[in-house]
Length: 568
Image (tube, rainbow, N blue to C red; front, side, top):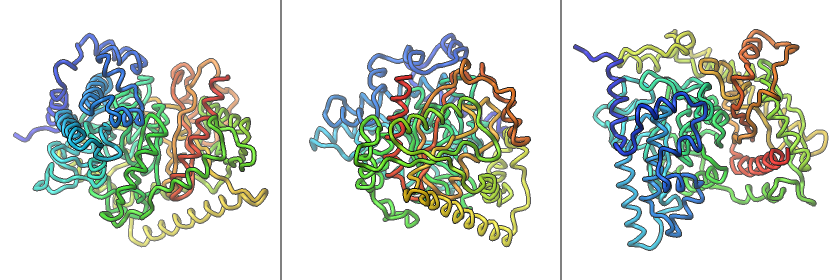
């Protein structure tokens, strides 16, 4: 008798838990306490791990690298600490797809032996534990990408090559001295702003368990919020790095597509090459984003992947923006202040009170610090999201359904209406869609250029919400135009955390006039009590290939926001 998809999924869940050492497993009583707790981050999760693990996992990425290179910590101690915290994180939050702690500890011992023998590190990421979204192939490890039918294999890879393929960026990270130890949860199909699939169920927001962690790189964000990773690798084709970062109070960077290598990475509808997804990083600090970006580009990924644009990390660009402000983000005398745009609404769906307040906090902080801010009124994001959606659905969901058919599993309920099997888009219609996309790119670029007309200073970057709401109620994510328009333009974006929702301040506006049915639906979903404490993130958007610039500006913006929050 053929095994049911439910049985395969259940067996996979059990096998994953079996990879957690007995001494790191929680009791049923502890799990029940976690289930009833609203916020399971910080001191709550730390009660279940040893003091050394708490101390080590509290370090940021740069602190870890320095401690290892200066021999204050061995790689083995660092990796063991993050494995323990990740193990507990998964038990209370359901955020991991793959656990390979034994492989990680073996790698850690190798790196310690290398240091002892050579007196130096293997590379700039020596000893750094890095988590991966479950799209990246690691030798000896499954890549299910949330599909039951790929349990025991690697999605999209010939069965004869099971567990032998390695994504290029994985090879690059290993060559730089990193240690890989787990792969994180994502939604079935990837095409969803939450994290839910038929293998593990749903990953919730560990900061606020009544809300979603976002998606599709949701497991990464949840793991970081729980302290089980300081930095990880994800992907973004519609907001997948930015939405969960904003929801879980961490940082992320979505580069322009092909700045980093997508070679041998599992994906939905890989034949759709007109608007490619981007590989990017998520972290608990801006420093970590820069360290990762600089290190990987230092491997010259374009030599092995011809799709990668051959540009090394441009330190001079980063420094040219950093010197325009002091450590607190204040504009320096004699330097040109930043000129920022701010998108208050996308023309379809307005912002919930916490998100609007978060944007206002950023804008007022920038102005107080001596920077310029103007309203951003670009070409229609509705047009962009329609074109973008046309590309993602062009194959009529045939790629998705062939993966579902491997096991007989159904689409998760959230996707059943939108991803039914359909006739693929005809070639001429696809070409027309491409023309529309190119025209939108030109219009957006022309608008950006026009911002210099009044004062001869073009906007440096644009502030945008990651969504019209803070970390969303599970099952209520349905509007992605604040992020996917930036995929259509292929612009760079960095996400920083700002405020948390406060029910005493962020009250429901009874007089709000919705822009339309979707806006009305979004507004009616707002509940000040339920959203209380939910994180609010903001995008800092630059143009194509402006990653170094965006990182530098993000430092300035984050600094002024932190100063504003401390003095409020």
